[in-house]
Length: 163
Image: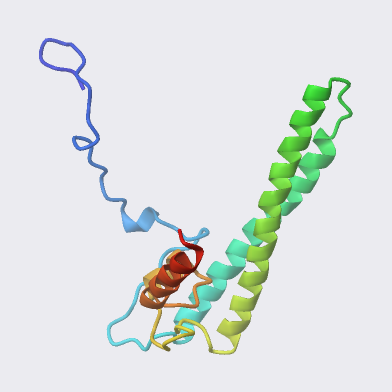
């Protein structure tokens, strides 16, 4: 930020305010957020279809990453004569494979969630049975606990692990 005399003045984080993002530009795996209708029943056909599309798009994105990793590893695999270069490549591949392993587990969770959507068992808390909420589900489509139950779970876990 420049002052009247043209010198630069440092900006602080409190002086920088982010403008709210217009909702029309926010997408969930390429899909727009769900627009709820007045007096609409929770997890009706339209909402289930919306979440099915989100879950399938997310799954497709993850599967494309898997394909890119396989291609990348095939193309980049080289037998470097320098042990340091070889170690660097092996570390990069190891990191990439760990990431893909986490994504593989996430794909399984997405598949289980898609089954729940099909069986009309989606969108309600597994512990207390209340509605999880459209916005929470859009933020975390595989959520199976409401915010309150998830918070309690995390508190219990923290107490058990001592952290």
